[in-house]
Amino acid sequence: MMRGEARASLRFITLALAAVCNPALVGADSVSFVIHISVDGLRGDLLGDLIASDATGQYANFQRMVDEGATTFNARTDFINTTTVPNHISMVTGRPVFLVGEQPNTIDHGYTTNTDPALSDTIHNQGNSSVPYVSSTFDVVHDNGLSTALYASKSKFSIFEQSYNATAGAPDVTGPDNGADKIDEYVNQSTGSPQSASNLHATFLADMAVERFNYSLLHYRDPDTVGHASGWGSAAWNDSVSDVDGYLGELLDMIENDALLDGSTTVILSSDHGGAGTDHNNPTIAPDYTVPFLAWG
Image 1 (cartoon, rainbow, N blue to C red):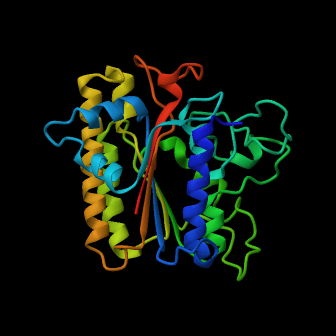
Image 2 (tube, rainbow, N blue to C red):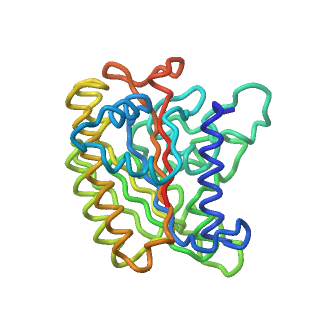
């Protein structure tokens, strides 16, 4: 099982998607769009400290999400894994990476590769062999006739496109048949530097002004890239979080200046892992497994 607040986080994502796909089910008829942001390597306690001591407004948009939404700086990654791809799969599937304790062998997704996948790899054929198909948030939204998007700033996120494309995606058996391709728009801009996240962010804003995807997963790599190079909690790392704060400001402005998005959009922000020193591969220490979870809308 996952640590406590991670389960709550997954339930909130599920609730937000339920509001989009079936508003009457949760009594949230104003929710039409969910923007799900993953800030790679964003450690929860460090973010909380930066916000609390912010005298110059470097983290004003994170503060705004705290003030106007629901927040914890003490959410959790998967119980035994603190690497990027496995935890992002957990984010969009609601499944742990591996079983912990006595659970059915159909619970975990079982995908542990954290490098670029082979072209034939999918979450389904490289993960838990007891689960023929691992459904995701993209399935839920797409199969209800709504639009989806994934904007990633690391090349290894291609595993999602390979797993949920027209070839590997499951048949749509929910209402009208919308096809097997679960991700309507897939954009991957990865140069190995934080600049790729900046470029990706600009692309997302431009595309969202035209397409207005009902569910988007938006991945910013900045704190992870800088953490590996300069250390989590370093001045450079703090600056990378400030860069993400700038992205958030532009994103919130976009929402509030768009008549279709304003008042009908939920933003969910979390992370795949924290980090200590220049690494994050020890799931037994709090700096690696503690992440923030913010919801605004």
